[in-house]
Image 1 (cartoon, rainbow, N blue to C red):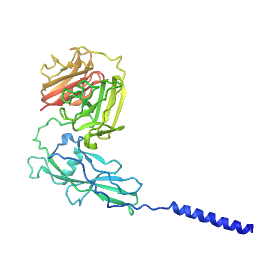
Image 2 (image 1 turned 180 degrees about the horizontal axis):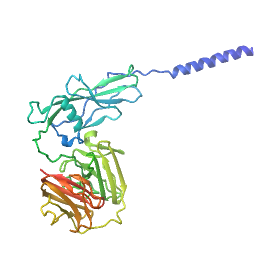
Image 3 (image 1 turned 120 degrees about the vertical axis):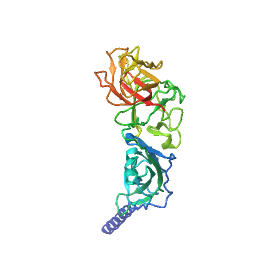
Image 4 (image 1 turned 60 degrees about the vertical axis):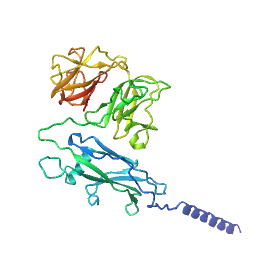
Length: 382
């Protein structure tokens, strides 16, 4: 009798294990007929493309998130083509988990070349045309079992800037200007707002070292691409860098809860930032900072003085500075004891150590200089 009971118990346990193993073997079936993926960008009438700005971000494509009704990650692939049929596909990025991706001018120029566009004035090839983009959403990593969905095609109008032989125009670079109650301009979006200092080697990387008037009651600061315009606007979404283009609404401000000096860095392509306290207690203060050089009005003899900020004594600027082809340097107090330069035009960083001269193309500029870190930026004016 005991033996029979033991056998029955063993059968029950075995059946229980079998049932449990079957319970764990659910199969989720991804549905491909979910809401269609759509681009959420509002495009310009046309995009001016120049090899001089190859590293610039031409556009950040944004689309709605796909939902395949399965508890598994959804990935995205950005595809481009020179023809609407997508017979030849260029994959710009794949395995993306975010629903946005920045496309550079260099990407666009390569596609434009594939489309037969040409900016040479002495050829018959057109310099205007349309490029085509779409997004592929997919789940699964087995090629035989991947479920995918394609967005509608986005038509992207481009113009290749024609350059005359021997012509070397001033490069068009991106800019970011600070606005907010911890900055000198406050919440005025057109009050000679302090710019960030663009990296000379990466047009999507920006720096600022200086004062923020933060407190427990301040909101913080945001970044504007164009003075006098609230969009595009950069800030944060939670702890992540975001923009009004990405969110479809204004981002939150970068918070600063204490008055003092800080070092700020943001990369608008990688969507990353750092904001750290900076010790400026031992930094030198100067009575004057000026521009000198054969590109400036006074040549190498007389400085063009910059205006010192009343908010942060280490920031200097001048508006509407007319320069000619040549070179300049920044120097302190009309002397050569402290001077800054670099080999990169428009933006860079001097080291105050027998630096090279800064190359300049003829034009009118708003000029900014930071004596804390030696960074400078020349902003071309129309």
